[in-house]
Length: 168
Image 1 (tube, one colour):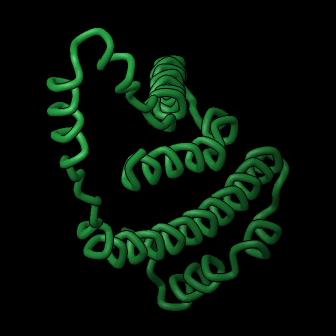
Image 2: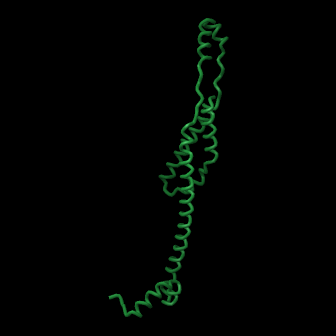
Image 3: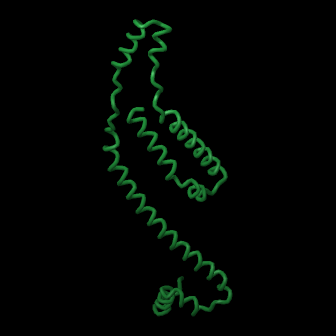
């Protein structure tokens, strides 16, 4: 197998092992997304299997003697000479070095966005807990208890009263 083919098979095999399919499946919310994800996984597995089997094997060597007996040595030698003269060029990857820095910078941005998102999610979770707590206590809560949790509002109301501003 050529170096490029072997490299593709190796990359596909490693990718298949490092993808957290179950973790990604847990993040899906809708039934349609689950179906699409399932079809993506099946397609990936099919391609990966094809790469593993079809392209990872070396071609069987040609039995020139068998053909010499059946066709004749002169013609077979001509084909053998032509076959041996074929030189398959080695694949030289010129694309990856161009895009690797861009990809790495995108990964950094992704990590930053993930951290920001997690912090925002944490803040929102706390806010939800506060609102639920307030919802339960709102019917029995006194103004002093409310202002204890929200001192900025107490200051605002005190300033309005002090300045004789009653909102109309």
